[in-house]
Structures are given as C-alpha cells and as structure tokens.
Image (cartoon, rainbow, N blue to C red; front, side, top):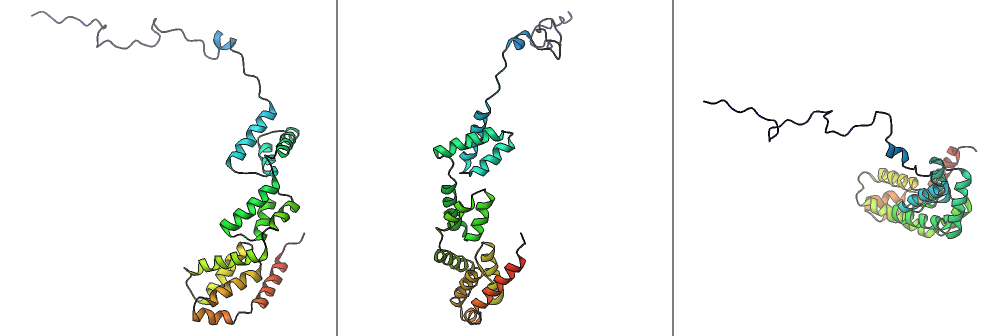
Length: 229
C-alpha cells in the first residue's frame, strides 16, 4: 500500500506566513516618519478668538449663561483676558449675552419651580456673577404678596404627608421655608395659617402662636449670627 503524499502547504491546511516573510511590505524604522508623513503639511494653529467663540456657544447650548459664567469658562480653558473681553463684548452687543434677561428668567423659573424666595434667589444670582443692581431689578418683579402665597402653597403641600405632633410639624415647616429664603415673619404666618385650617388639634396649637413675637425673635437671632464684614 502506497504511502500518503506529503502536504505541499499550499491548500486549505497551509500555515499562515510568518512575520518577516518576503511578501510583507517593509516597515519604516521605529521612531522615523515615512516620506508621505514628512511631506504632509501640518494644520495651522487655530485663532484664539475662534476657539473662544466655540467655547461660549457650547456653554450656551446647554443653558443660558451670564457674562461672568462665560468669562470663567474661557479663563479655565486658557483664553487670554483680552480675547475673552473682545468676544464677550461682541456677544453683549448682539444680545447673545443679556444678564438682565437672564436674571428675570432665573427669578421666575426658580420661584415657580422650586418655591425659592427673594433672599435665596439673590444669593444664587450673586454666585452667578449678576450685578447687584441688575439682580435687585429682577427680584423687584417678585412682590411680597406673591412670596407669601407661594410660602402658603409649599406648606399646604407638605402638610398632606406630615406626621407628628403639631409643634414638631410647625418647626419642620418653618425650617423648610427658612432654607428656601423666606423671612421669619412670612414663614411663621404661613405655617400658622395652614395648621389652623388642618385639624382641631392643630388649630388649637396654632391659636397659641404669636407670629409677630416669634418673627421678631427669629430676626434678632439671624442678625446676631450674621458674619461681620
């Protein structure tokens, strides 16, 4: 019986060529660029103003920004103060940046959506770099009656799920309004009125509350704890 024919290595069972076979194209030495890479021109550096405008537009695509917020973003990306001022001045001229409109929209949105009072809103606008006069004008659109009505609405909403004795509920709700920036008088009266309408037990407790005296005491405490300039 004749022996099997030896494999030629050219069919389906051929082994793959080893690295360095003659059929492989030569590789350039490590650390050297090919002639094609050397001849390829490098892209010119981008204009700083163009980069600054691109940064601003990306920031504004997320949400409206104040001039101070955009200036801070440009500084963090290494844009010079001169270029930053030039770009932001131009955006001011064409209305892309409008701190007054931003402040008005911020006050309306945050008061309606989060129930924040003027004091809390003033702090937020200051942190965003809005000028004091601009912020005061925007906050002036939120009057005392609207603020008191919002406080009452917030309290009534919380009372639906509040548990505990009336005095404990009273303290929690006044604290909630204080954190949202409501003055002591507004907070105490809102909670007292809401408790008076809730139940007989809560109404009896509310009847004993001297809103004016408590508001004066809270105001004195705030002034004592206020840091000195």
